Amino acid sequence: MTIKKTYGAYCLDLDGTIYRGTEPVEEAAAFVKRLQLKEIEPYFVTNNASMTQQQLKAKLAGFGIDAKKERIMSSAIAAAKYIKRWYSERSVYMIGSDGLDQALRQEGIERVEEDAGIVLMGIDRNITYEKLAAACLEIRKGAVFLSTNQDLAFPSEKGFLPGNGAFTALVAASTDVDPVYIGKPEIHMLDAIQYESGLEKSEMVMIGDNYDTDIQAGIRFGIDTIHVNTGVTRMETVLEKEQPPSFAIENLKFWEV
Amino acid sequence: MTIKKTYGAYCLDLDGTIYRGTEPVEEAAAFVKRLQLKEIEPYFVTNNASMTQQQLKAKLAGFGIDAKKERIMSSAIAAAKYIKRWYSERSVYMIGSDGLDQALRQEGIERVEEDAGIVLMGIDRNITYEKLAAACLEIRKGAVFLSTNQDLAFPSEKGFLPGNGAFTALVAASTDVDPVYIGKPEIHMLDAIQYESGLEKSEMVMIGDNYDTDIQAGIRFGIDTIHVNTGVTRMETVLEKEQPPSFAIENLKFWEV
Image (tube, rainbow over all chains, first blue to last red; front, side, top):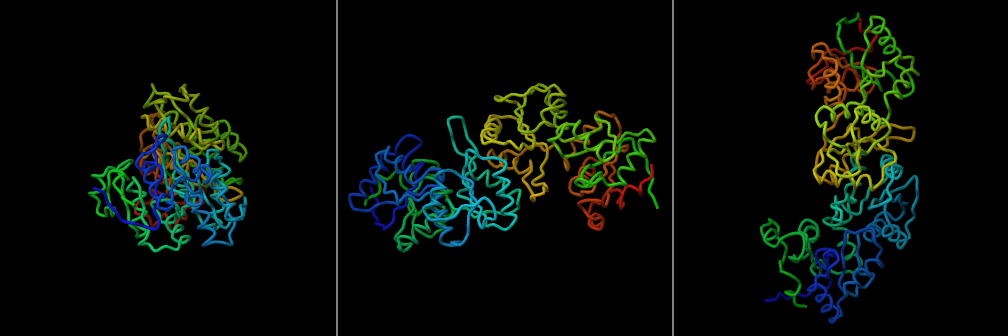
């Protein structure tokens, strides 16, 4: 049995949905191909802020998926678009990696080291005391505090390493100011897709494996959600939620386009 | 009018009590001299974990105070003594500065980079992602999590900079493990003084300017407390507390020895 409902924007999570670590989820790769045969280009929606769109496109290509670069919505891209849309006059003090830096460049946003209108945090493997201190000082002087995502930890071959959410928690604890998070479960990535596509919410669907991030983002934004049983949250857990997804399927083989 | 009550151990906070930034609190310096004339050597109790006992002694000497080095109880010294007393067999993965390193050496505690029995955090201006990641990994593998103090921010000429409590919050958020804090308002520094001196609690007094750290530590440990109105917490605020200090005085000129 398959389900068939057609959308204008299919917003696909990456890790756990399109691939698992270094392995593709075959049914998802095939689903993307089926969409593209019908000339529908899906969106790829990831909390990752360290990689550029080009790097993410290359990663997807390694799994046999031909993603349109401009359809890749990372939390870095969404952060830059958020700043451009809501704070176009403000300069940014940034902690982060290439992905975030390039996202700001793409939107023509000025980076400064002092007297910033916005502090924007993303994961930075070259973090220093001075960078964190500068973020705290700028926020205390009144800068708006944004962070790409609240991921507290992420898996590595060594075990779980601290994620951007943990570094953001440091700055929030020290300044007693809570940030606006851009990534899932917040709605800003989906909002950016709607804003640029001009679609109605009824024409959008968020597809993902993680109830607390992917499905929550879709629910909060008020669009349809499809849970796939290929990653973090088990289907039986999802079905017991007070707010279940619109649809729950084993994998994307069960979704007709 | 002066108050007179004699103790075996006078435990004096430093910043806000003995000095304010770079200026001595004259009445406190005179108080220390009066004690010493009666052959009473006071204890100096500070959450600072970055300076060694020798460095703190030199700082006090700069304010005209001749402190006995072994009577200086920093949160670094107390942390090392805590480990020695309760976890004598365990090796330590340390994030911190000279003060903490030397405190561990003094107690003969082994430092390791992996497979630690304890993770101990203090302020480290040379913090790196790798150090924080190692702390997270060791805690997730089961190491006991200790931190010198929960100070979230401290003043500098530039403004408030992130303190050890903020870095500890990062590791706690990422691992979902709460640390044991050594510094005030926790009791471990006072406990170490009692343990080494063999005094009864009734013979001890904690003297400080900060209700939330100094006075709270004394109250929680169950000893007398003297609030001085020379630093953070105003006397009128202190007197309104549900648990006020045993005594509240303008400064230590009003305490007879």
